[in-house]
Image (cartoon, rainbow, N blue to C red; front, side, top):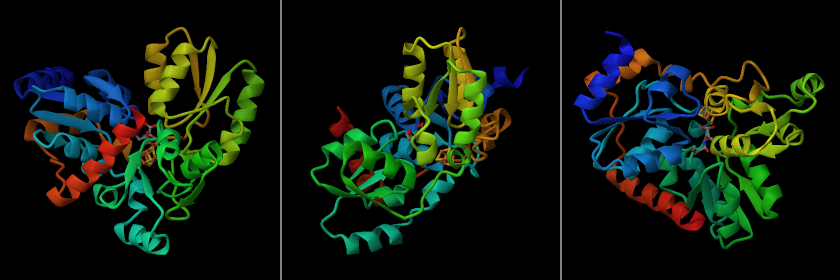
Length: 303
Ligand code: 5XR
Ligand code: SF4
């Protein structure tokens, strides 16, 4: 039996749902019940009342959020090594240090943080709703982490003072994009629309026709009449974009834009994870409760 058939069979037998982030390998996206960004997927998990097991094919912090929002389900991460380096950049000690410096300033954290960090913030946001969340926060100055580029993007959009914590946080994959590459591609495809993720540098954001998260890029590409798109985000999203828009052309703005952490999840590891019910992602109750409040506050502000 083929590996894919084995996974489908096991999935039924165990009442499992497979969720894949937009940056997962094509073969994983194809076998998944849902493909999306981490919050879309966590919400899907909440809707799947019958499911006992959630295989969350993504990185550590995303599986943690799913576990926090779905405490009665078993959340499995196919590869334990799939950890987001940006999430590691903001420790609880660092947050406490900034809070001590600015005791009256609210802390907004990007969901790309560990649950332990989320437990120390007022509200979370994703790259899709960061601007809306910051606008809704009743303060002109906000502590924001860990992504410095997203912080800068939100500051420009909202006019509020955003203090990045740490001062230097970044996504190593999105930092790889350079405007020179886009300029060359534009000579070849002058009509192309340029979509850039807000985790990219300001120089990259300056050459964008559209700046948005993975879910926003999907919507934009569907609704926009352009035939060709130059895309500055992790290459996995291009599989989804091409699949959903077969008549359009998508070009990755830099060939090497791969998140190696996301790619640690393979079909083989997903199969083993489902079969052996590993690696179970759990969050200590006290932390989970506080992190859950920050996530729920985000849902409140954006609805
Ligand atoms: O960089 C990421 O990890 C992906 C992403 C996205 O656009 O999907 O930035 N994730 C955030 O939006 C967090 C929520 O899903
Ligand atoms: Fe983390 Fe960047 Fe990979 Fe997303 S793409 S999981 S932010 S390293």
